[in-house]
Image (cartoon, rainbow, N blue to C red):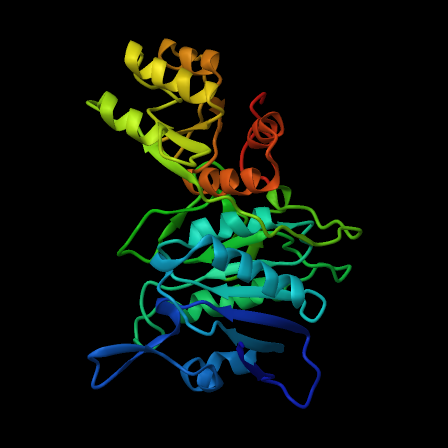
Length: 359
C-alpha cells in the first residue's frame, strides 16, 4: 500500500537513531522536469543526490510515501486519521517521526494529530518548504535536515528531547497546535504568537526547555480515530446580516461553530444576533469563541460586548488558534454525544493547545 525507501548513510555501521519520514505531498518533495516547466515529486531513493548533507547524519531514515501524494489544500480529517494510524502502527519500530507536508494546512494537521495521538512520548515533527527541493535557493534542505536532527535528539538519559507534535520551519521549532501560517511568500512562514518558541536552530539548536512537553516514561500511546467534521467557522465582521447568521446556525447536522470574534472576544450586541446565539445553544449547538487577532486571548466579560456571549453559554477559547479550535471541536465531538462532557473538554487544555479559562 505504501511505498517505502530506507537509507542508512553510515552503513554498515549502526545508526544513532531511526526516523520514519512520511511524505504526504507538498512543495518540499518536488523537482522541476521538462526543462523547468513542470513540478513533479522526486524519488526518495535519490535523496542523497539532492541533499548530499544527509551523508553526515548518523541516522537511519525510512521514507514512506502515501499512495497518492496530495496538495495540502486537499487535506481531510480522514487523512489525519491515516497519518495517526501510520505513526501508531510504526511507533515501536522508529524513535521519531517527520512528516513532510504542504504549508497551507500544516497547522491544521499538526493540531489534529496532537489530539489524535494521546500519550505521545516521541517526536512528531512536521516540516515543508516554500520552494521545491530542486531549486538552488530552496529552504527545503535546511528545514528537512534540521527537522531530522531535532527528531533524533535525545537528552543525557537517552530520552527524546521532544515528546509532542511540532512544526519546524525557518530555524524555529513551534508547538504544532499553537502554530499558524502567517506568510505565503517569505521563508518565515509560521508563527506561534501565544506560546514561546520551543527551539531556535542557529549555530546550535537551543531548546527552550521550560516550555517543552515533558517526557513521561510510563506514557502509553493511544490513537483516537473518530473526528466529527460537521462543524464550521463564523467570522464576525461589521455589517454581518441576520440572514447569514441564521442560515449558518441552521445547517442540517451541524453540531459546533468556532466563532471568530473581535479583539478579546467581542461581538455585536444587536438583539437579533444574541437571539440567534441563544436559540442555537438551546438546540445543543456548541459555540467556541476565539479571537481574530493572532496574539492575545479571549476574555469573555472584560468588555460589555462579550459579557452577553458568556451569559448565553458561548465557550471561551482563551488563546487557542482558529486551527486548533476547529480540529479540537472535531475531536471532542468525535469522542462523545454527551453535551456537558463536550463542553467541559472544549474549555479544558488537552494537549497544551490553550491556556486555562481561569488563568
